Length: 491
Image (cartoon, rainbow, N blue to C red):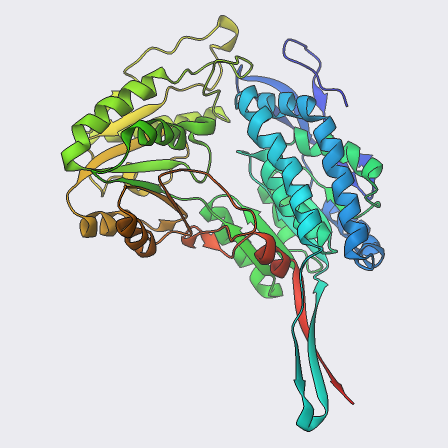
């Protein structure tokens, strides 16, 4: 694989991947390098015509792929994982440039996790069992089988492009489905690069089809197609509402992961030596552009001043720099529009009388001349803000976090639960009883205690309330990407 590196002027032209072939599109849209603000890539602006071609290819490939044994499909996934791993550096360079994240993060998290997604589901598909019961008095045996659903529509976001695409793609094809995937039009490059590896891995034509473009055009064509019975989506709540509307006439299976407004609750017996650096990371990793990032920090009053002092000092130590800088902790935000949206929340906080302790509008951002037009922003800490503020209620999805004090356990649980989201939460305490008690009462699909972002892929991932519908993980993904059937045999 080859990829134009920083400093080259040639525009990268992507093509759709349908039925095992790269196909040009009649229309293209610009994709920007977040670190410079320059157009560096052109992405197909696909629509209904391309989705029809992809559906035809996926439909034709389904009988052969679904009839393969789990062992055979597992071997293909393992080969694809090997090929991705061999291309790790090229993929990391591409992901960093396309999304704005640091090259270090792409090398150590995004691409290794993409490889792991294929390895994990290649293994887990071999270990599912079915149920069986007997009714001797009626001479009957009942058992269940799981069969692939058919064509899976996968829509993945721009924040962790290959990581989250493969988290959907791997279980879908492991279970025997064929796939039509639509990556974000903002970050399409690594999906396109992966397509170059599919034939070599042994993926038959039509099993994986990648169609690029805008949500309102190609996304809606995919979601509303009557021959695509299943949609897995990660992204915003308004888009999920539209997907639900379009899917309703066809009774499609939906998995929707929609982000959060995640609290960290820090009790007075927390180990601040571990808590402070971890909470800085949980607030600002990947520019705060992770659905699991902390954006509300509740600190018990007795340690509030001490925590705040340490937290602001540690935040100021986080370096914002060009993505290729190995000493940078944060790169650029995804787009100019998103940067302006994040900045607007800080303006609103100021208007409400909140204090900005560090970051945007307080500290100076130093960047090389070539990157002055890039979408960079300092990690920002807000205090003296009310729970009713939009900064405490709405998902900002950027390097912004609010720190507020609390008195009692009951109070902070109520306040943590007072938003419409319920994806993740973090609890810091040395009291084991309290940790269990609070974790159970928090309305969150995931709760970390005294740590953050330690994942066990076997266990369910997903949120409560407006953070989504459904769960993903070994068992949950397998159940989502299959249909269960009960068979009764009378003898």
